[in-house]
Image 1 (tube, rainbow, N blue to C red):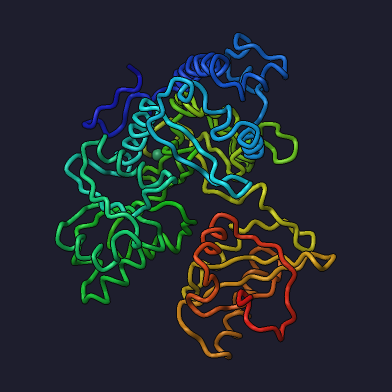
Image 2 (cartoon, rainbow, N blue to C red):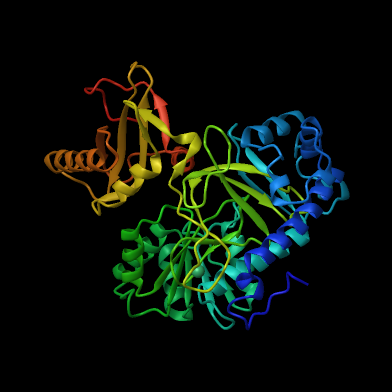
Length: 460
Ligand SMILES: [Zn+2]
């Protein structure tokens, strides 16, 4: 059984396999996955038939490039035509074998359901266990998981991966589920060794500990912080690690990609579990493969999923894939951090700008909080933009203006555009939690700016 894992092994044999062995396994799994989808997933069969492809045509990774690329809008159109679950879910739905329903955010604003069979859930748990193992988690460790247990898969992946590995879990959920002071008390008394959190919540818990007269670096047993769901800059990684006196591991995640990648102790990108996924990068415009090490749009293919399989699914993240050997000894290729979103790239005064690049600059200012958005004014012919960001604490008018000027200068230096910058008091940028949630997935909003003398934004 190639999928069998052994908790005692730090590195599984397949993680050290030669390129030829990995490709042979991928091609075998690909043939099986294509045959399954042809039989039971009308969404793909129709597209492949239209492209003149039969399952027997797809035998090698070269053949694989003939499969048409699919995007979020294809899934959303399918959902509208075939409610409630679309035709992309496949046999699990027909056979009534759905174990769990997750969802990612659709382009229509409605959640896009992604069904899982029990086998899918178990395989994802094994991949999550591999990830945690690569990050030093072992049986006997205790994880405090402060990620949400919702349609989004992040909390569930951490919980089930830890259990599959033989470690224990304290499923406290987010601060909305277990108050931050209670989270700190639990961490202090029960001595969990791993904290799973967003970077911003890891910092909030450190602040809460200090407010409770505890020292995050000394009074807790955390030796590892598992973070996900937000951009982790090198500065932020250092800050989280220093405050908790623990090693920080960044985890790339989405409902579609699940636990497909993992950072190892070398901290140089995310290894791709290539025995379960094919990751490709293609040119944003031509869709042609880009060479190893160059930026392109990420496409993912799942090799194991029974329900809701993905074939050449355009995730939209701009990344590069590195084939160079890793210091850890693993041979799975590595994906870079996300450099932007293909569909969110903006042209501001002729310059390509990714919201992620702006976020990196903002995160370099300790005076700024994590809530921000880029407002693009569609009224003017030349696109103008304004960065709206919250301060960590209330500021005087003079302090606010000085900080805004420094942020604008840094943006100009780093990404070559000079948007207006407006600093908001903490908690005032998104008085409505729904707006905050929306902006977290899409940082750019378009609207007509108001005259500068208008009352503060978001009051209407
Ligand atoms: Zn490595």
